[in-house]
Image 1 (cartoon, rainbow, N blue to C red):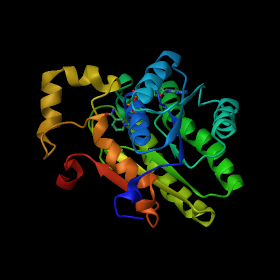
Image 2: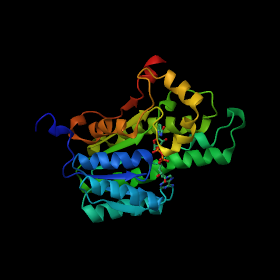
Image 3: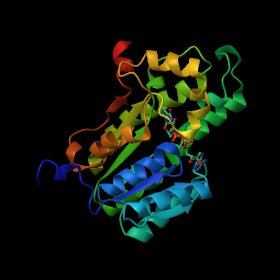
Image 4: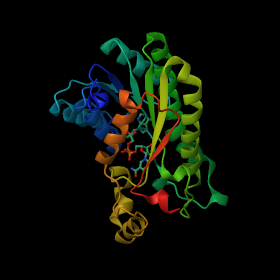
Length: 261
Ligand SMILES: NC(=O)c1ccc[n+]([C@@H]2O[C@H](COP(=O)([O-])OP(=O)(O)OC[C@H]3O[C@@H](n4cnc5c(N)ncnc54)[C@H](O)[C@@H]3O)[C@@H](O)[C@H]2O)c1
């Protein structure tokens, strides 16, 4: 295998929970360009259609599954449909999550319903599809790759009402290390990317405020926020043979933000 072939995903099947989202849809198209076939899972059916069109433009035929990934039956069904359709499952990229900007409260007053919602969206909706996918990977016996999306906020406090989100992303980073430890014996690696702000619909309203955007950008040495396309290269690394001996790692994709802390 040549050095560049190591990054290719020909013959691999990648499942993307959150495939309708700003990041999930970009990653879906990116892994297809690298040769993978994908299933995209989301509760947003219109978004799934948009992602499927994008994937067809790069010459691949996706499977779309509408599902609520906070529900175990739905998560199990999404994995079963993926394996039935493609006959294998090699990679899961967990791209459900977020919500931070919608529920900002002082830490001492953080309301429990909003706390539970952020935990469900970020932790439960990662755990359920991953459990189902990894059980299938173990049964299929080809090893596999789990790629999570944490955040720079797993490591950096921010004085802006983010208690639940930082706790949820801390859990995702911890689970990345724990799962890597437990699943290595099955040939399954587990890694995470940890972006700073990425310009997706989820954060568009925050970034529309020029003062807010300027304050974010001023702390990032590379001098801009992220784009969804910035995440594709690191995800190809974790999804491909190029990272066979890498597991339990959390890669900052932050234009140097955490290097300054
Ligand atoms: N955008 C950023 O600035 C940024 C920065 C760091 C980390 N992240 C993380 O990246 C991930 C993706 O973020 P994004 O910006 O693409 O968000 P997004 O809102 O565009 O995408 C999330 C997707 O998850 C889907 N979803 C939500 N709940 C679901 C459920 N119960 N069942 C099925 N699907 C569900 C939504 O429909 C949406 O398509 C999140 O984990 C987020 O925390 C984002």
